Image (cartoon, rainbow, N blue to C red):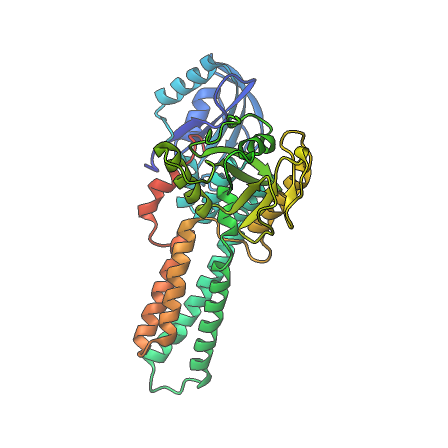
Length: 422
């Protein structure tokens, strides 16, 4: 596949003043010369006429110093569909083929221009909805996560070398402190990995977005509150109890974090089969949510904890606010700014991290858990050969995260998520 020269439109679909087309592969230089007469100076934008198709800005990017690590070119074309089709037809006639989803970034990974964590960060950066997601993706794209894992891998390689020396030269006068150094470094690595894993899924939560479930009895104003927070009509509002029978979702941004608000059915005992199913689903969504917003319209309970927040709605009707609750009126807007502020604070507390970069992918977590388990096995191994084997398996688990070993089976799945042209 890498012997092919590929092309794709890298800009968005639809009419635009400018469209960007990318070209990468071993025949890029010859194709560029055939299209525009002569190849421009490397990495300088030049105005060229592309046969009888368009007059465009062209950049020649010789490998290995390109995005893919191959000879590449970019065309900044007029955005009309006829122009794009004309250039595509010309490239196909010259022997190029349309790129598959994520193929440019896949080639960048295979050619050593980035590791797998950085390739995943490219996808996350494209998909970022908020500033916080963008910052996290940029940090990962800059190599912060890969640097952390490669550092651990290098320490493991040194440990393995020391352990192999203890096995291969048992009768030699090796310094007696070597065994102690191996055990101390094992303990330190296990502690660092455990701290990294015990992060409350902050990076994954920020990448995927949080879920806040809005629950409460019928007619306390759950749907009205969701509509007010979303600033649009998401759910039907009615004085009839049991109007909401299924979970309705809407996406909002709170504290720079994407949050899915889930409006659920009113919690009560009911003989209505459909409403009862809605209540069951409401309880299930509440159990799986990152935060439960309990809406009440009377001082029937008080306080908050880490998993739920009490909101007293219908302040426009008067009445006492339960202790610890946030008083609001979805009808008049009273207290909504304070509620948004509290919800934003919770969203940030669940996703913000300091120190080393957080885990962002489920596959990272699985591989790290395996590496930590192997280190635990190495610590308690009865034989030095078994300890060495555990160290090798831990090293392989770390290597799967960055893509240095054993990732062939996941490449198709990973890069299929990318858009064509990236």
